Image 1 (cartoon, helix red, strand yellow):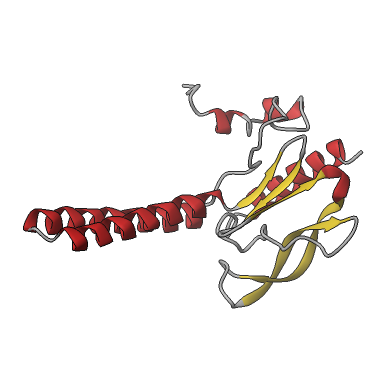
Image 2: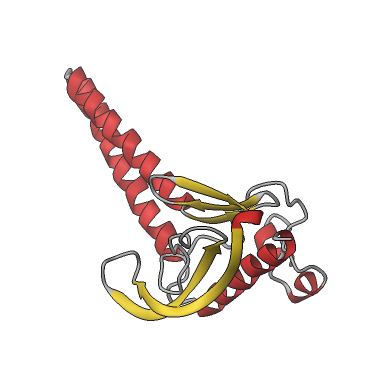
Length: 183
C-alpha cells in the first residue's frame, strides 16, 4: 500500500529516480539532498529528552516557589532544545543559488560560481565527529579561490555511519547539483 505522505521515500524509488537527475522540482529552495542519519537523529532525541526533564524540573521548582531557579532551568531547557534543533540542521544544503554549509555554530554559503569541484576522496575522516580518525571517504568541495570548504559529509559521520549506499547516493546528488549549476 503506497503512503503518499512519505514524499522522501517516493524520490528513492527506481522509477522516480530514472527520469530526473536532480531529486526535487523546485531548485530555488534550500534543501538537504539526503536525510539526517540515525546517529544524528538519535543524539538530537536524547538532547530533547534531557530538555523535557529540565523543563519538568523547572515546573516543579516554580511550583515550590523558587522563581529564579525555575528561570535558570527554563533557560537551560531552551538552550538544549535550540542545540538539538541546530544539530539536526548540520550538513550541506543546496539550491540553484549555491551550496550552503551549515555547522553547529555558523553557516557559510558559496555561490555555484565560486565552487570549482565537488567530488569524493579517500582520506582519513573523523568518526562521528570525534577526534578519532579512520580511513574513509569524504565529499570535498573545492573553491575557485582559497581553501576547500571544511569537510562535513563523510561516510563515518552521524548521517552515514554504517550506511555506505546512502553516502554514495548523497555524493552523487551533490555532484549532480554542482554539475548542473556550476556553469
